[in-house]
Length: 220
Length: 95
Length: 220
Image 1 (tube, rainbow over the protein chains, first blue to last red):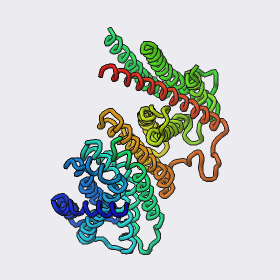
Image 2: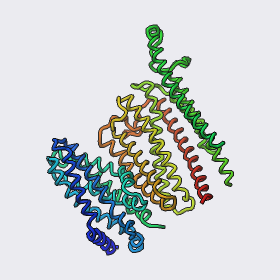
Image 3: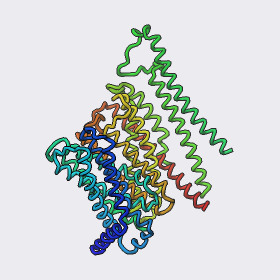
Image 4: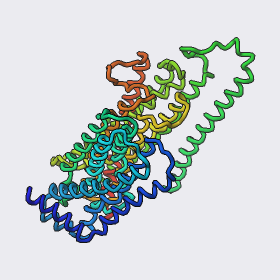
């Protein structure tokens, strides 16, 4: 199981970097989105709430555009049946989850500094800000990965993906926005409840997706 | 024949809903208008209702609302009842 | 024969109770009687969701032949829940206009019902995208379970984290009921008869779904 998982993760990275157009377009999307939103807001002195809403909206749309790819690719290239024969559903999900998490954290590495610079964030508690980004990003990744498996299997594409993922991502966005606002407005590390909420949410989603992936991914 | 009956039924339901809407709107509007006309005369005679409803007074708006709600419910229940009967008939035919 | 048919008697009885037996509310007067319709509708829209989730779980995890129709039951319950959630939103919005002065003000509980509505829409559009068959049942059931797992986060945690104008839920933390005795009796009666209505509609819709399946089988 462990060897199979490592092989699958390695396969994900190899395939994506053999033909890196999807990853590169995801990176350029995140950069362009951040810069163009800051251009549209025209260097207005935005309130912390507005700043954090803009930041998380950019993160949301980046997730919508980039994290759907690993599962869709298997269906598009016709490799899904072989993957089903070759490795277990759990290791497929785990490898896609790891790949998506790495991709999404690197996308956040692009978005966050750009947003901090262009939106003129004043970080009262930078550590709390970073922890919020990590927890929120992880929750978004966990949710979007399992939903992208559903969308890939159902043959629908972008619009369906946005419809079915928005209600589940809403609590994550909501809590992350509140928590980011707190980190911009006040110092200290006091709003731990939001972080616990985000971690509990992602833990629940990951547990459920490992429980349900065999119904989504496999043909009976 | 079936289509005609279906169209007729839909029209009937639509007319019932529209009618209750018109009735509510104009009935309540007439109530307000009438109230304005008689408010000077009735200011002393009509006691302000605080807790209980006078059971004998059929002009209370609450009875009107109750009537409308019951009317709507009767419409819905008739609709459900006929659907139920139709389903039972179909089930018998399949068996 | 069928106990849910008592709804034809229970419903008019509780309509009469709400208008003649229950006293007018303290602040709103007679307009406050909308509580006897809003609360049962909200209860049904949550109950329908729970039932749909339950049947989704049965469909996925149960092997017994009695669970063969669980997929259809889950879809029927979700359709009904969507209907009741729309009615809850409408009545709640009327009540909000009467007591707070605006139809919609993004109170946490309003947000919660809106999210429930979004989940229903997402589930039904996913159901519509997929073609009929075993795959549709399993994928939709998986999505419904994931969505159902997020509902407790909305219903309980989010309103508690942020201030609300909404009256306490009937079962609040002190387990006390701030309500006149007659109002309480009426509310219990309306909740019971709305539950009967839901069960009756559920039976009807399920029988229609069975008939449609038979017809599809004949036509094929």
